[in-house]
Structure formats: C-alpha cells, structure tokens
Amino acid sequence: MTSRSPKVTARPSSEARAVARTQTLIKGENGIGTVRKTTLPGGLRIVTETLPSVRSATFGIWAHVGSRDETPALNGATHYLEHLLFKGTRRRSALDISSALDAVGGEMNAFTAKEYTCYYARVLDADLPLAIDVVSDMLTGSLIREEDVNVERGAILEEIAMTEDDPGDCVHDLFAHTMFGDNALGRPVLGTVDTVNALTADRIRRFYKKHYDPTHLVVAAAGNIDHNKVVRQVRAAFEKAGALKEPDATPIAPRDGRRTIRTAGRVELIGRKTEQAHVVLGMPGLARTDERRWALGVLNTALGGGMSSRLFQEVREKRGLAYSVYSYTSGFADCGLFGVYAGCRPSQVHDVLKICRDELDTVAQDGLSDEEIGRAIGQLRGSTVLGLEDTGALMNRIGKSELCWGEQMSVDDMLTRIAAVTPDEVREVARDILGQRPSLSVIGPLKDKQASRLNEAVA
Image (cartoon, one colour):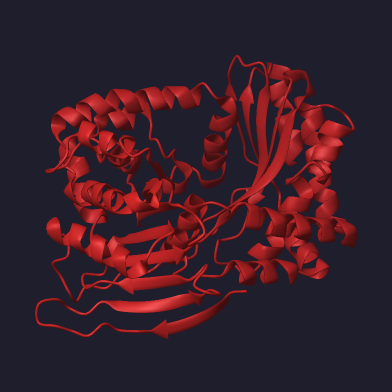
C-alpha cells in the first residue's frame, strides 16, 4: 500500500554548490514504489520511482514543448528537432550515440506529442550511468549542423509519406484538423511536406535554445535505482555541458488556460483509393485536469474500450460491419476530444456511422446500466495496473505527471479514484459530452452519392 507523503529534506548548502531541494512525493512500502523529486539550482527537476525487484532501469528527459508551440511556419519543428538530437553532439557522433546503447543491449528512442517531447533509454540497472550520460548529452549538447538538417529532412519526408500510406492513422490527424481547424492543435505533429522543406538549421537552432532550457525539462527514471545517485549523475552531466548556469531559475509551470471548441456538425472527407473507409465521429471532450475525466474514462471504456463494449458488440459482433471499432479520449491542458473510430468497407460506411451515432445518442439520453458501469470500472482498474508493469511505463507516468500536472498520484490513489466513480457521474458526463452535435472525418474511396450523405451522421 502506498500513500502520499510530501516530506522535504533540503540538502545542506555550500559555497561551491547551491542547494538542491528534495521531496518524497509518494512513500512506498519498504522503499518499493517510492517516488522522490529533486529540483536542482537552475530549475531542472529530477523524479524517480524505485522498483528494487527488477534488473532494469528506464531513464527519460521530458521537454515542455510540442507541436502546439509552433507557429504555422514552424509546423513540424518539434518533431524535426527530435530527430536532430540523435545526430551528434560536441562529445559524440551519431554513431557514438547509437553504438553506446547497442553495446549494452539497451533501447533508445523518442516521441513528440502536441504538448511535450520525450527522449528515453532502457538499460540494465548497472548501465544506467551510461544512459544518463548519453541522453543528457543529446539534450544539452546537440550541434544541429546544417548538413544533418539536410540529411534528416529526407527521413522525415519519408515518415510523412509512411503516415499518409496508413489511412487508419492519418484519419486521426484529419479529425484533429476537423475539430481545431488551422491552429496549432489542429496541425499534424510531423508537419507537412511544405513546412518541413522550408525549415532551416538556423530556425531549428533558435527553437532548440528557446525550449530546451533546464527550466523546461523534467528528468525521470524508474527501476532498480538509487535516487541520490541518479541526481548526482544527472547534475554532473548537465554541469559538464554548462547547462546549469542560473541558480535562481524556477521550473516552468504546467500548461493552463481555457480553450472553447465550437466546432459542431463539420465534415471533412479525403478521397483516397483504399480498401476500407476510415471514419472518426466525435466531439469536444475534457481537459486533462478536469475532475470529470475519471467518469469520462469509465464511459469511454464501457462505450468502446473492449470486446464487451457497446460499439464493439453492435458494430462487429452482431453485424460484422467492421474489424476495428473503438472509442477514445484525448486530453490537453485546456481542452479535449472524444472520438469513435471505425474501419469498414466503403459500401457499409453509412450503416456503421448510423449505428455509432445511434449509440452515442442513446447513451447521452439514457445513460449506461449499472452493470455496464461496474464492468467498465473493473476493466479500467485492471488495465491501469497492467499498463504499469514495466520500468518504461513507470518512467512515462512520473515524468508526464510532473510535466503536465506538477504532482504525482500513486497507483493505489488512482485505483481508489476510479472505483469511486458513481453511475450518476458517468451519466452526467455522458449527457455533457455525447449530447453535443458531433463532427466527422473520413478517408476512403467514397463516391459522390456516398459523400453527399455524410452530413446525415452529424445532423
């Protein structure tokens, strides 16, 4: 059993080194699951979770920058920069970076989202110092040479082309554009062919210097680790790069603000010669800080989160109209999305959309049964725990929590909060979210007559 126990233990100050502030955020039993946080002079935050029973460790650095921080002309810069940080530093070539982790059987990668970027490495516990040094070097010492920018441009254009070849993936980018329009949240994380071709090394360097300051970063590590050793190793790596120069700097706060999505009844269709029609029917959801997100999670699970969900049963099991059908939520700092995805034969697209719309309307009006809600709560609790069974997932949880919420919640607290969701809360959020007029995104080979009927799904 774990519990919150915010206990501050400041290190003694010295003339040579400014004070680092350390807190125990979650106190685990016998040290297992203990989450600690140290804030270094200069604003760099280091969060760790201890799991002594494993022989691995995952180390990551989270940057408070995503595609929503880009101007239209910089669309794709965050993701471009993610690629370039693997291309070499003052101390290591691109081959040195990759071979260092390969030589110890480690895994290294990165991902870019709309509101954050993460670079990480998973290694044996004994090799954690190497992972810390390599990843920290990448984040603080990237050269971003013009020749590397030009070479990597081709790889990114191929990645865009690969995404375009997967309509089941591309339709979600289209849905974001349908809902948000031509603004930062509505533009693709990868950028477009035009914006990527227009980005220069100089513009990317300026973007790097602006957003990769230590005050914008969160270091996270999980596994068979010692918090104090991780802090010392991270501090040494950043000091070696000259990245901790301002002892009075404070970490950037989590994103906040309010955004109102007024999109309703909008339809976007991309005609493409595919075997299936790929559709997303959805509406505005909840911000990730909204307390109703727990009830929305239960609603999403019952509606389209598994084989027993309403959408799976109605669309696939009873009628065989789609192989893949599910619902999902996306929460941002100030807004969110709720969507239903299905891939089906083009001739069946209107039948699938009618069933999905009917189910959304029914649940909005009548709610879910207590049995459905109870089953969804159990499923959500189980999947929450099973999804945190490796050090990579633990690192993601604590790193994202610090960056996006500025606080940590233990697994036990999460399970308690899910279990506390009431049928009335689920029915209320169903009325609020599903009762809105939806919008629709479609990719597929629809004929003119089929395309003209798409508005029926959002009427």
